[in-house]
Image 1 (cartoon, rainbow, N blue to C red):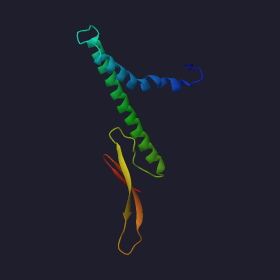
Image 2 (image 1 turned 135 degrees about the vertical axis):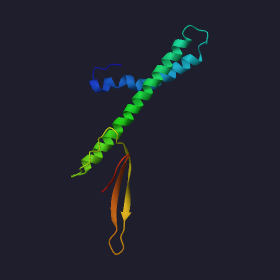
Image 3 (image 1 turned 90 degrees about the horizontal axis):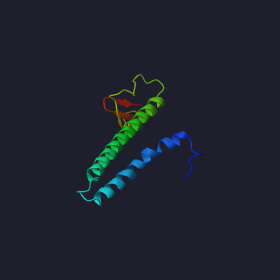
Image 4 (image 1 turned 90 degrees about the vertical axis):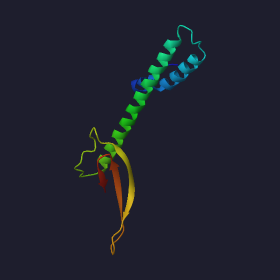
Length: 121
């Protein structure tokens, strides 16, 4: 196919998107290759390397997604004194808590749980 109409960003992602296909292809080729064949060990090594790279890329993508979530949360507060984008800090989840005191109105609070802090808003 022609890639002339695609932006460079679209082209850069192509090899990463192909890794799962390469994993399956190498697995199938290895499965149908005799263990005595000269290329058998090379196929196993290639399969292992592609799998390792896929794991690294997936972990990196999850890390970026967590950072983006933390940044979105940080941007949603006007006067947040806590920096949510710290290397050791990970966003875990958020939820709504109904706060009620005797004789007072019920108030909805949103809680944001990180690995080392809890933000109540």
